Length: 336
Image 1: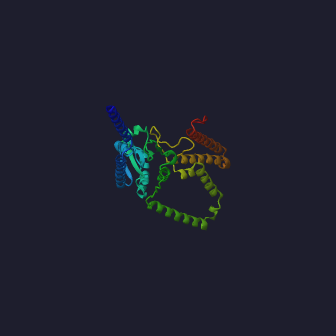
Image 2 (image 1 turned 90 degrees about the vertical axis):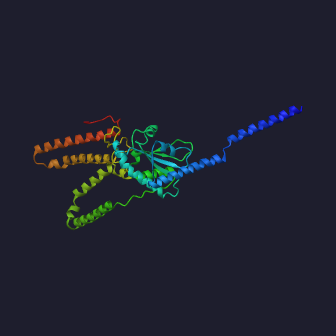
Image 3 (image 1 turned 45 degrees about the vertical axis):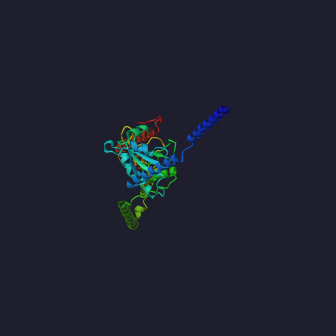
C-alpha cells in the first residue's frame, strides 16, 4: 500500500513538472522581449546615423534592402527604385532624383527622426529586388508602413501626381502622419528674371499708355489676347498648374511619349501640342471668313481656300488622332 501511495505521489510530481515546463515554454521571456527591442533600437540608431551623413538618404543594395525592411520594425520606409547609372539612360530617373532628395532632406527637420527613413535602390545594386516586386520600369517609389507582420505597401503614381517634390511630400505625410516640409534653395536667377520681367512690363505699360492709346484700344489686340487665353485654358494648362504632371515620359519601348493614356492624365508637352493644334484650326477658320474674302484676285482666293482647307483637314485629323491615343476604343478617324 505504501509503495502504491509513493508511486502515485511520484507520478503527480512528474506530471506537474511537465505541465509547468509546457506553460513556461509558451510564455515569452522578458529577456527575449528586451533583446528584440534592443535590436530594433540598434537598427534605428544605425539608420539614423546613415541618414544624417547623406542628408536623409540611405543608399541600399539587395542585402541592405532586406535588412531595413526586416520584421518587426517600428518605422516606415520610403524607397525609390531607380536606374540612375549612365548605361541605363533613364531620363525620368535623373529628373526625379533631385526632387526626391529634396523631400528626403526634410527628414532632418522632423522632431522624431526614428519614425521614417528614405532609401534609394539602384537597379545596378538590387536587380533581385526589382524582380521580386515585378518592376519593369523606373523610377518607381514605394512606401512601406511601420508594421510587424503586414507585407503591404503603397505605390506612388507619377502619372497622376507628377515628379515635383511638393506633391510627393504631401503623399508621404498623408500616410505617415508626419509633416515633412520642402525647403527649396533660393533661385537667384529666377528671382532676377522676375524682377527684369516686372520692370519690362511696367516700362511697356507706360509706353503704351503715353504713346500707344490706339494700340490699347485696338480690338485686334484684345481679340488676340482673348484667343491666346482660351487656347491655354482649354488645352489643360490649369490642370498642369494644379497637378504638376511630368513634361513627358518615355514609353515602355523607350520611345519618347508625349500623350498620356486616359482622360485623367496628361503631360505638359501634350497640352502645348493641343493648344497649337487649336490655334492653327482657329487661324484657318478666321482666314477663310475674313482674310480670303478681301482678296481681289479670284485665282488667289481659290488657291488660299485650297491651302487653308488642306491645313484644317490635316490638323483636325491630328486632333482626332490625339483623341484616339487617349481613348483607343474611339472608332472614327479622318486621314490618319
